[in-house]
Image (cartoon, rainbow, N blue to C red; front, side):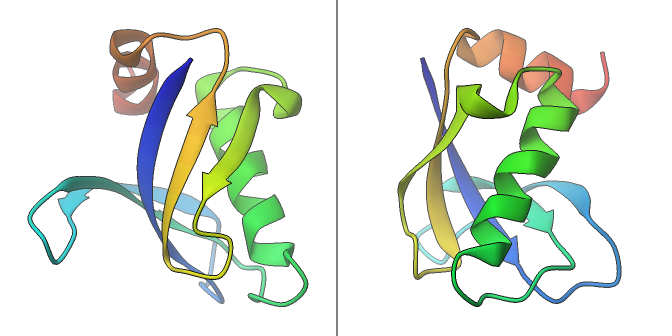
Length: 92
C-alpha cells in the first residue's frame, strides 16, 4: 500500500492531475482538480475515480485515508508501491 498526499481543487473546469507541488509546510503533494463540488463527498468520490483511472487500478484500490473535509488529503493506493505510483502518474 502506498500513501499519496493530495491537494484537491473542486469546482474546476475539468478533471485533471496538475502534477507535483508543495503544501504550505513544504511537503510534496500531488495537485488534482475535479469538476465535482465539495458537497456530500462528491469531490472526494471524483478524486478517487480520477486517481484510479490515472493509475490504472480498480476504484476500490484507491481510498481516502485522511482529510475528508480538507483540501489537503491522504489517499491510500492498494497493490502499487511508491515507485509504480510515481511512474504511472508521470506517464512513463
